Length: 257
Image 1 (cartoon, one colour):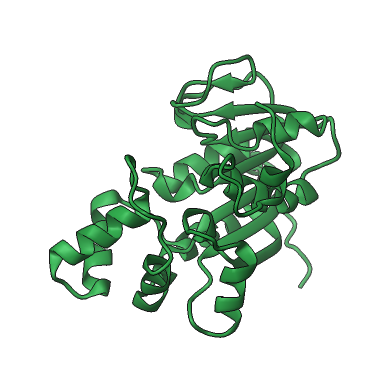
Image 2 (spheres, one colour):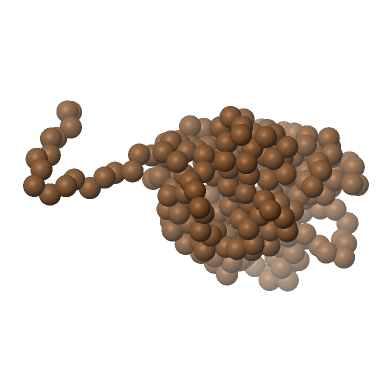
């Protein structure tokens, strides 16, 4: 897949740029900045049918592999769940973009990710803090939805379901989250911190790519003014050293306080 300049910068207003391309283009600078130096080996968890960041990583000189049941065809992809993927070698970095909040067993997936990394390997994560999707943020997004099309986006569907439910937003959102089994952003951060030494974490714009005429800068301005909450999480960390069990019949020295 070849990426246009507009996609790489997350540009707004070009009909040739999809919402997925806008999203990936806006987050690529963060991902690229925290990857090891090319030609490092990088695995992307949940690259999706468009291949996620794999095309960008390959263009930047990385040895990239995308793992997803719906991954596109090609030698750089594996059409399988990450939990069932058997890698032949460890990689230098793991990338996951809005895929962790969907997995059934978050701890198990992250344990596999840790085992798949070389010592000191890096995790570069983009995620959704769904617990921050309050009513004010939802209404701000719904007021900026593009016109209905043949395939309405996920925000269109949430808006329609909320209206049909007749319930307060918080109650509706909680029922949807339970039905989908979505992990909260803070839970994802806690599980990451248990396995990685955090190097950076930040919150920012999450919805702009699915909104009409709205850039990530526009959403950030609304966040800065207090109109809405920041829903995107950007996180990077290094794999913690694995603790080794002491051998029997050996004395153990206590660490200095």
